[in-house]
Image 1 (tube, rainbow, N blue to C red):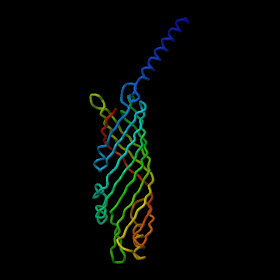
Image 2: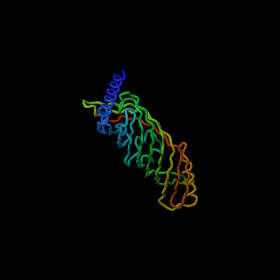
Image 3: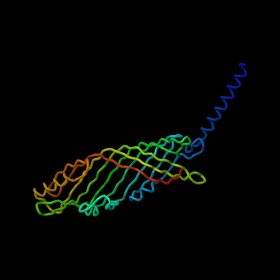
Image 4: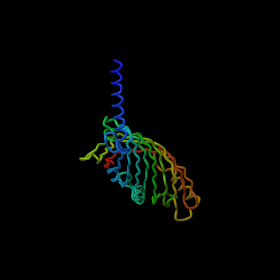
Length: 254
């Protein structure tokens, strides 16, 4: 009886060791079953907003990966400005240039038992964003006289959010990837500096009117603290920072 037990124990240990040896021989860029563990991709939907973006996803386990994304919008007109502004605000916004960039770090948790970068996922994420604006004309009144100043500045935001989506492989070799980001939302805080420049020296009355105009800008939930000077004004801005995410990405795994 003891001899039989010893033989079965040896067989079990040998089989277990052989399986571990086979798994350990898999290259670091492949899963034990042979799937590549790296994916590069770009979100095609973002290009509708002049947003150029690149993502790299590193798969660590069957159900976990980490995605790093860099995106930027080159300086140019505000996209779809007529849908968000009207009247005199529209005219000023059409003259402005805006640029944007962001860095996003996104751990992903896959629900699919096959995993390794495919199936439904939930992804909490952190995003650092910045927006640069120049050439915006701010109009204000001094008595019956209309004056203007050219605004520029930069606002940065840091936010946390959650994204849900699904990703799958296509093609004969299953190397091409499609990633549907169904819905995501993030919320955080922002701060920035604005500057309003006049083309001439301002009187004390004009300075006060410009400062009041900046402080009274109708930007929901945003605090503006302006300080006028002889040649315009500077302003500190702060407040919440929120956004939504969606997209359809095409990538390649290797």
